[in-house]
Image (cartoon, rainbow, N blue to C red; front, side, top):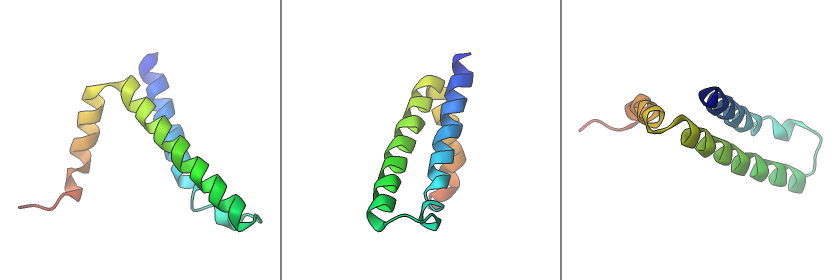
Amino acid sequence: MIKIAGYILLVISCLLFIMIPVIPWFALSKSQIAGITTVLIISGEIFFYLSLFILGKSFFDRFKNRLKFWKTRT
């Protein structure tokens, strides 16, 4: 049950990050867009780190190994 909560938090964090490029399409002022974007970034990071804390080190290691293609090969 705890793992499901961790995955739900991970999905929520991904959705928050996906919402960032959508916000400028709404009829809002520039200061409102900046404020909403800031809140989305901060809350997305918080949800992401909470999900990593709940899912544990093994999930973090798997997640990190999947991102190894970003590193340059020596």
